[in-house]
Length: 470
Image (cartoon, rainbow, N blue to C red):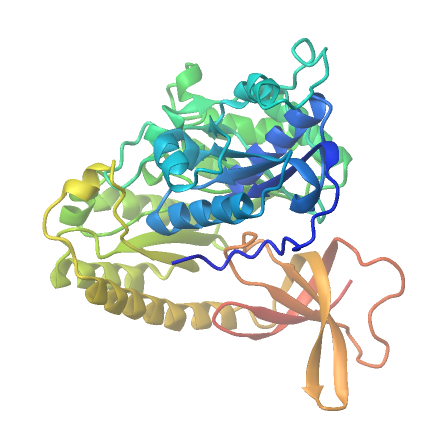
């Protein structure tokens, strides 16, 4: 079955733009940063980016292969572009799925002309030459590597910053180490250079990402668990005008006390952490090859909340993992009820053919996975609405990302601004809908600001409503 990707390639083919490329990014925010590196590399070779696939000489899909649905989406996108290829166009599959399943890609989508694995961007030069795409003669002497990525501000006030790649954790359900190898911290001077570039371009929020952001520096010789904490201090000193630095994908075992204290002491650190736990029952965690000592988890959450009483904790869980009994699942529900996380994501277990989890016994039937997923999300909605309602009357700083209208009645349509508070990460958490202080006065004239102070007036399970203060 095809996914819902629609590229809207016209039937009539216009002439191709010589030395141009179209780049489609799938998957996570880390892929977004990788695509920026690919785009910069190709620009260094003298190619120009176009948003129209029908005009591009080179078509690229930066693929994702983390779960089966992502693999299917990547293959469908490649097939869609392959079906629309015209004479003179070349199609390349790049990124994570290309790293682990190059033969499968070329078998399922014969129209793919080349495959470039994740972080193997230097392969683009020789491949383009083999495909007959002219690149600048000086490209090999002036190539732009991932480590020296020159960051350009994207539309809006938020940008992602990758501080590491790969992973050493070895979770049974995950194939990231197969696709991207062991954990590799990026050199601090490269990271600080990018942060300064982003701040100079007006970015107000920088989201720190990596397969495990709390492992930063350990491969560079920092063994006392202070690597990420030290990096945060350097980021704050380098770009003091950034409103928020947001930490995503923190491995629970490495959320150290120095890291917690640094997050609490730096005014620019959003009191927010994304700490995927995956499950709570000891037996399930052992089958997952995850930390199973619940006293560690309880202690980490307690220390985070003691240091930052207003912290928003996001986590994710997998339901229906092989061997998960009703007792184990109920233990997870009880844990969620006790911990009262601010934001929770849940995934139904999806086996990957090359992962250890795919070989584990006692698979959970799909209908049971769905039923457990529904129960978990229903519980979290009850928790979330209470959390959200407790914010009514509070004033929050908000990153303003856009605007729209809301219809209060057939004759009453009003403008609103849309943004996020420190409690919400882009794309995965809820929004703040902002109304003017006085309906008749409306919003201030002039360009919409990137930040606003808002008083919260209402709440739903995921979103907040508020009135503009300043």
